[in-house]
Length: 286
Ligand code: G4P
Image 1 (cartoon, protein in one colour):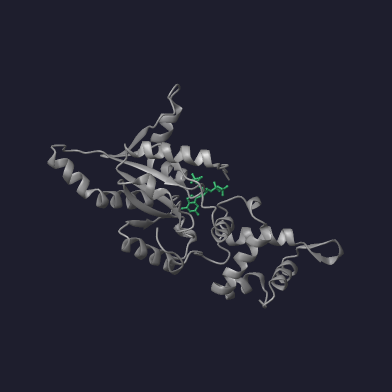
Image 2 (tube, protein in one colour):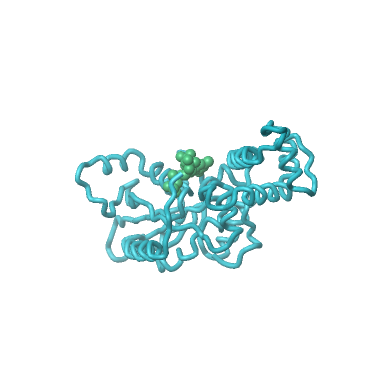
C-alpha cells in the first residue's frame, strides 16, 4: 500500500497545484471507495474544482453493498452531482465511463459547436485520496497508451494528456488528495477497509469498530463465518473467534494480534459479503 505523509504545507501546495491544473480540465472524476463513499472524500475538493464539472465515481463497487450504492447515487443526484459505480478492474468500466462523460459534456460540446469548434476535446482529470483505485482506473482507460508515454526517455513529468478515445483526453497522473483525518469515526472506517495504514490507529479499535458494524448489519454472516454465537461482550466475541480459528498462544491464551489481522483480512476480502460503512442519513453535505 502506498502511503503519503501529509503535512499542512504539503496539503496547501497540493491544493495550489491542483487548482492550477484545473484550468486545463473540463471534467473531474472524483474517485471514492464505494464502501465509504462519503468518508473517502476530501472536503476541500469543492474549493479545488471550482466551476469544473464534477462527477463522483464510486469505485470498488464489487466490494460494496448495492442497496447503499443506490442510496448514495440518489443522494448525489439530489445534490446535482452526477455519480456512477464501477469496478476499475473490469473492462466494462471503460464503456460505462465513456457513456457517462458523453452525457455530462453534452452542454459543453454544444457550446463549442456554436463557437465553430466541430470536434471539441474534453479533458478529464482523476482525483481522489490514496488507494481508491486511481491508478487502476487510469490504466484501464488508457490501456497501453499510458505506457508509451512513460517509456519515452526524457519526457518531463509535466502534465500529459492521453487520448483515450476520439474527443476525450485524460491527464496521465491523478490528483492525489489527503484523507480526512479530522474525526475518529472516518479514520476508523478508512482503516477498516485498508485505505490507511493499520499502524495509524490502535488496531483493536479498528477491529472492534468492524465487529460492531457486522453485529449490527450482518450478524448471521459473522456468526456463520466463524462458527460463533455473538454475545454482548465484545472481548468474548474476540475470544470465540480466536478459539474457533486456533489463534492461541502459549499458556492457552488467545493471541489477539492474530485475531485482529485475521478479522481485518476477512472483512477486506468479502468474507461477510459486500459492505457499506457510510449511511446517507449520517451526513450533512458533500
Ligand atoms: P490509487 O492509485 O488510488 O492509490 O489506488 P490503486 O489503483 O493503486 O488501487 C489500490 C488497490 O485497490 C489495488 O490493490 C487495486 O488493485 C485495488 N482496486 C482498484 N480498483 C478496484 C476495484 O474496482 N475493485 C477491487 N476489488 N479492487 C480495486 P493492490 O494492488 O492489491 O493494492 P494493496 O491492496 O496492496 O494496497
